[in-house]
Image (cartoon, rainbow, N blue to C red; front, top):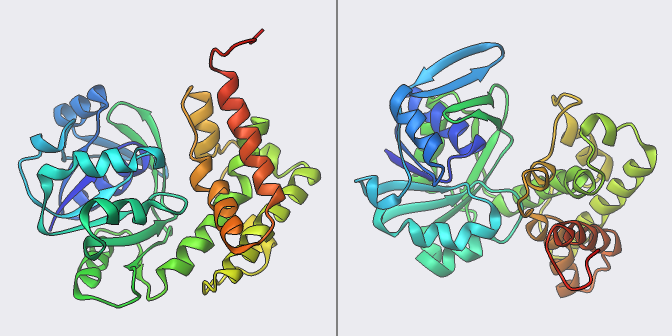
Length: 314
């Protein structure tokens, strides 16, 4: 199976490197030239549980340079780059190519379906973690971390089984779901638990979980998400906000930084529109109030805006 990743940051490199080490034919596609050069020169350095290995894997900055038509294209760019990424993937998308998002939040599959057709699109969520330490060097968290994939219509297709088998053969624990929409909402609750609050406060998980007032706000935000999912008649497995709050921190060190906080600290935009913003949009559509998530979105957007030049800025 030829697998191409559109987006080879920490997570794309971690999963792609794991698949390649398990024998899959993988190409990492990312505009970060230094990262690509380091991988092609010395292999991808993967550090996990104190042990480091080098994985031979192909990398390039443009899909056109991959030189293949992919069986599977995995989208792992920042959410707001999803449409640009799938359009840039055109040279590697053929008649039989499956396109799958492993991004956080909701709404990516609709964008992909608009660009390549819904019949090509699968969905997935992963609890695998990764940190980019330097170009060509990642700290990966794969062991014991689940990935769940599935068809949008809930069928257990042959192509879905083949992808799950490929992941599992490489040591990436993967389950096939007939309720991927429920899985996506469950993961959204976990992202809602800390994403926006850490972005606003600048706290790592050690700080976030030490302040009771922040816990109260997080639980309220999760509860809004659960109420929205129920109104949408989504079959969710997380129905207690405290379960999502606990799961969000499971196995993570006190110094853990959410992707939203990392984005702000790096001077970039966040994915708040696809996480807390998803709760707000679905809530508005279904008539479910979401004041906590609306406030979090507004505050994060205010922090993003404060970094720009605007009339009257002190």
